[in-house]
Image (tube, rainbow, N blue to C red; front, side):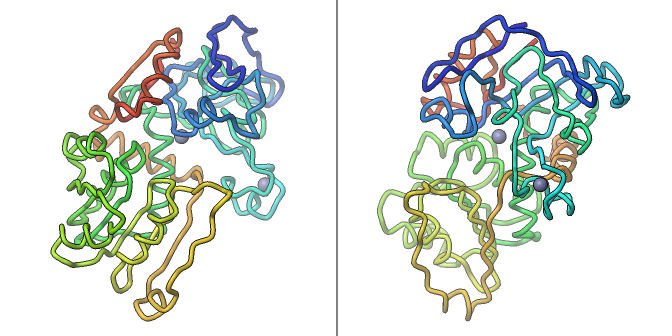
Length: 346
Ligand SMILES: [Zn+2]
Ligand SMILES: [Zn+2]
């Protein structure tokens, strides 16, 4: 079979490799689509500890069940599925609580295990047993189904901030994830949904996708810029979808009474300590949450949202390349163009 093999930084080659066959408890899926994530870009440009070359990455996977290992009888052969990323150890306290994304021995498809930038992929027994292989309707466009994984992560973050109709919402960052957050907040009836970014070309997508109101921030006085643009009223929900520490500080300052703030994006690990005015949190009853990846129920919620058209999925998918053209997919994401880039592995 063909696979896009990651050999190291900026070195991904489409090669002929051995087609996987399932060991007992495993499953092999024929990949239809795999979308490119921000983390795929990071691995491509900088490498990552849990991706040891030669490796096949890609975790935003839509597939078809192709072969079942001994002891596995569902989903049936040919079923259209998505394959969830987190693989829990099954033994730690988080796994016993079915919080697989928080497993103390967390592993992931497309990182520790081969992923979806290939014609076929093996799903490890642990992932099969955990329920990572989830049927989706064939009526769902596979390009759109490839959005389910990133949207599931967004919904994990949004579970904590519990947006209500009429909440004033602010998202920092107009990358694919920030735009999805905005789309989901809009679907929940937040008003306004404001998306702030320093890059005007990214903000153009806010308008194109109809997910909210773009605000172009240009100076270090971002808090004042945003407040000026919205008439001085702060926000009930604030989500940081960019890896800039200062933005976490802005987010807290822009939070109003009873606000919920999500530090959705991680920040560079060499400088993660942020001074905060804890009295601002105390007197205003502000809550701050983290979020990491997603759990299986968030995939189900995301699948429903995409199937119901709650997200303008056709607008989110701006590029599609064949597996052979994966170099173009990486060029596109490196240049910061488009929203979601989908690789067609058929
Ligand atoms: Zn992803
Ligand atoms: Zn575990």
